[in-house]
Amino acid sequence: MGTKTILVTGGAGYIGSHTVLQLLQEGFSVVVVDNLDNSSEVAVRRVEELAGDAGKNLVFHQADLRDREALNKIFASTRFDAVIHFAGLKAVGESVQKPLSYYDNNLIGTITLLEVMAAHGCKSLVFSSSATVYGWPIQVPCTEEFPLIAANPYGRTKLIIEDICRDIRKASSDWKIMLLRYFNPIGAHPSGHIGEDPHGIPNNLMPYIQQVAVGRRPSLTVFGTDYNTNDGTGVRDYIHVVDLADGHIAALQKLFQDPNIGCEVYNLGTGKGTSVLEMVAAFEKAYGKKIPLVMAARRSGDAEIVYASTMKAERELNWRAKYGIDEMCRDQWNWARKNPWGYGSPESES
Ligand code: NAD
Ligand code: UDP
View 1 (cartoon, protein in one colour):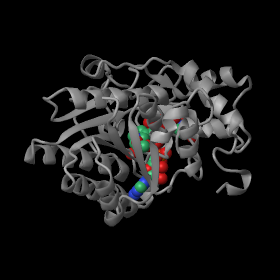
View 2: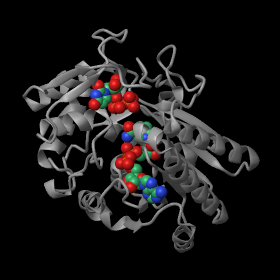
View 3: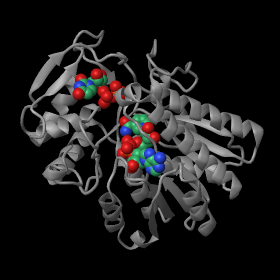
């Protein structure tokens, strides 16, 4: 399968850039489409460098998925074997404030992509869904059969896109779709040259801790100390972004090799839960100093404990996460200390 060409939407972003690097290293040709709304072209250039010789098999187009004409041109010039669709807005809180932006970007972007794919005869898709579709699970680990709910507009876009995928597959059996439900991706490529660089104030735990460590923020606010967990703080399933990227290669292999693929769903997590304070302690071990903490009330809408059942992915994709939280924190800190301002500079800080 070495000569296959993959379109990666959102390939300049955090998970996208790590996945593009692994695709290149596995011998795929890759075309990235990204509007750079939450990313930088520097990430694409660094991926190209890290890939060495294979870097020549990477093409970048700055375009918005809602720009049908731009997408049509890209599909007319290249025949894609599959699309990995990362592009979307992903901040839960912002989605509550600006629901229309989220519905417009995530839904119209995806529908346009699916229509253009169908028009050009490319019906193989890997889509970035999220553990958010499990809402506030009443038990853990979360299996793929759990009831699904939309806890906020961001989550609703994921659920609607999953439903759209199930529907198009029902309507036309030539679609082959992998819905990957990510748990909490953190860490960075071990080189420290690519990593997560969110625009604005980070919403997620690790990017926030990282910005405290490099002196961009004074302290970490711990949201909730009265959860029914070992230390009272919320529990999540953190997964190294390199393991997550590997999960996409495994999903593509299944897509290409298994004739019985319809619209399939897989959790990508480690199956282990870690509390906020455990995560802080693991980061401090890598960082060598303390992270100042401010204990605060629960963040509205947060679940108490979420972690994955990984059995289905292990069984059917032959994939499992290799790294633990120590390696995640080591690589997060390595990226942070080498790039305290991410891909930008203090002047580009918003
Ligand atoms: P990211 O913001 O770093 O990457 C998304 C990329 O998509 C960005 O580069 C952005 O510029 C681009 N983009 C957004 N809208 C676009 C549009 N209309 N047209 C073209 N490009 C567009 O986010 P990420 O963390 O890499 O997440 C990738 C995907 O995984 C997203 O769909 C996200 O919802 C999903 N996901 C992320 C997490 C997480 O915690 N990071 C968890 C579960 C699911
Ligand atoms: N969290 C926190 N302070 C922050 C950001 C997050 O205490 O600044 C907590 C949050 O309440 C949750 C965990 O860290 O228990 C993971 O939060 P994140 O937003 O990264 O992931 P999600 O809640 O979407 O799974």
